[in-house]
Length: 164
Image 1 (tube, helix red, strand yellow):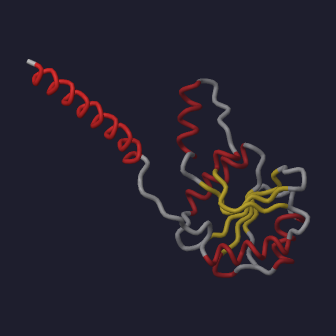
Image 2 (cartoon, rainbow, N blue to C red; image 1 turned 30 degrees about the vertical axis):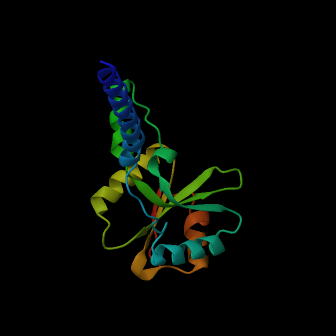
């Protein structure tokens, strides 16, 4: 009888210990496996340097989530949720802000992967919120003076398609 009670106690302790180990390991399994990736491609980083030189009195932020720039103005929670989902995975290449951190413009560096139809949709969403989009072609990146003119001088334009 004493052996049976000892066996039950030892068995319970083993089951308890195994449960704790499983609980400790389970969150680690859900955390996933990750590695660092560059914030920008070499091409984007080079253009970022041009933006910084062209706009020294501004802040330039690369790879900004659209959800940091836009929020839904839908009347119902359901529609607002749908709006959030539409932009949840989207980023803009660069956001240019004045020293008060007010958005001056979004700058996009377009390459062959860009879709004109999708770009128009994104630009339209930004424009609804009063945010201009300035687009440059990756194959013919302008010099800092032309970037400055497109971003600062043409502030009255809604969407600027820079051809330099």
